[in-house]
Length: 190
Image 1 (cartoon, helix red, strand yellow):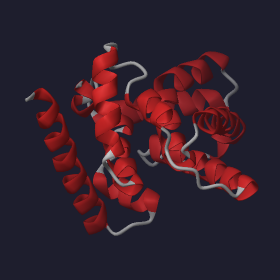
Image 2 (cartoon, rainbow, N blue to C red):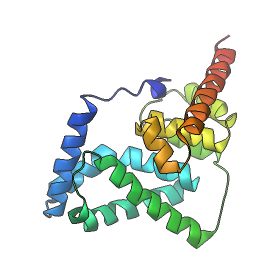
Image 3 (cartoon, rainbow, N blue to C red):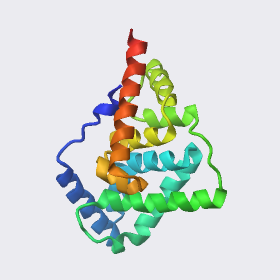
């Protein structure tokens, strides 16, 4: 259950510098830079796409489309210290185009929650089931805020901007959602 302890190695500034260097390499046509960028960010891009599209297959397709768009538009990125935010904006646009095309608003399925919650972190089936059940207690917007913070690593202000919500709403949904998850998990442990 280490999802919420998603400690990233190095400082955010160092990660941003590394991602900007990779984007520069992608803009220059370096295949290795693109592969490295993909490996470093695919989980976060996928989690964000899944939080919008709510279907695993659609999210996987959107993730791939996002990376294709990033590859073709990398030369347009202006280094401002927020490469992941730029990439997530590309992802958001891809997802919104997909939603418009399909015109669907399906609920996040338990299978999608399990995949999102634990692609690399949880190996125990019981832990997955517990976390999946806990996620089902949250409303979709709270779940999205929590996942963007915990899985993607966005700060609350970035989440507010990305979801076009007031910062106070994001903070409220995050805090209430975390408290609800803690209560659910405590009930399971007892």
